[in-house]
Amino acid sequence: MRAMLLNGLLWAATVGLTGCAGSQVDPGQYSGFLRDYSHLQPGDSASGKPVMRWVDAQADFSTYTRIYIEPSQLYPAPITTAVISGQTLQSITQYFDEALKREFGKKLKLANAPGPDTIVMRPAITAVSTHNEGLKPYEFLPLWFLAATVNTAAGGRDQTVEIATEAEFLDGNSHRLLAQVVRKSTAHELENDKQRLTVNDVKSAIDGWAGDMRQGYEKLRSASR
Image 1 (cartoon, rainbow, N blue to C red):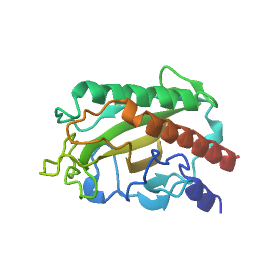
Image 2: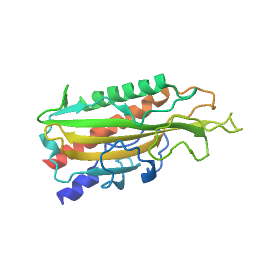
Image 3: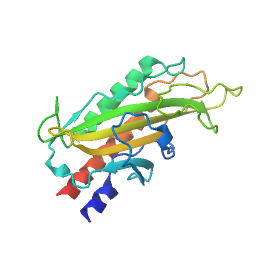
């Protein structure tokens, strides 16, 4: 029963970035960042968004009083364009870190390193892409981080921005794997294929994501008691 409850609550946290919901992540789109994808199962976040996730049903999340959030990564190394620059991608990861620390800091002490009574979060942004609204984004390629735009004659159309993330949670003392999540979402639209993406275009999305992750973690802690 407890196992069913924990799996049902798993990362209510992992909701999506605000805006239109992205589709379920296909296994062919996994980046290779996580150590093992074999246990991931499709599910819904607290807000009903599709995710792939796994949680250790035997984990007691109530024992963790601190969290160490590793600096988020761009994984694999990105290919940048005039629309999505390397500087923007770095700004996105920095803001991602700030949002996660702000939210988790409301309930857990922020640690400077792994250790006893500490849960470790390893987050990564595994895709950022833009494509003409209504077209299938071929940017999402297996095991490939891609920042790119679809070049078509319809360059004046709105550009849909999609981002993907993968994260895992570990015991800070034993390094035991506790939970994993994979998610992709649609963020703020750009006006055309010439407009440069900025961190401001994804801030509200990241804020919503981080807040939901924190709330989901709280539910996991309550279920463990």
